[in-house]
Length: 173
Image 1 (cartoon, one colour):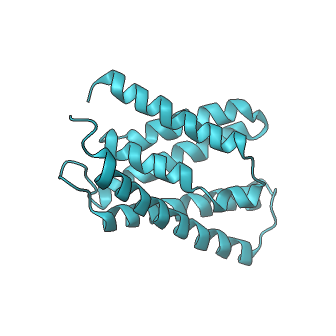
Image 2 (cartoon, rainbow, N blue to C red):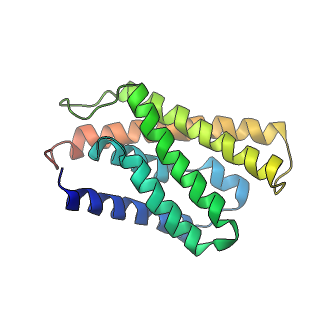
């Protein structure tokens, strides 16, 4: 893939993540529950840009959002970056590849489920235990884990569907 194409996809997807976070600002616990749009874009970026596509997109989205909301900017950037890293790592571990004619839906769902659940719990732990912004509540932690896994599974399914049905023939390596 050409550098300009990678740059375009990274900038476009990172900007869409930024716009969805800024245009529809959700309160702190709810924003950790519903991250389907971000998850779909990170998964699709990982398919388009083979090795670290989700990390690139997470970095761009994190920088833009951190600049917009500077009070928690470092954490916003850190979690967006780590989410991209987790997606890329789980794509590698589950051997999700877009080189075949179609991607394996089950593997993408598993990769996105694990990465979304981990980043959801990690961000909840940070905001509740380290920063003490949210109360430590097992029900809320369970809800974040449940909704995080659900959001990840839905995002994995959506990314696999979009890739297999519409996107696999757009960019030839």
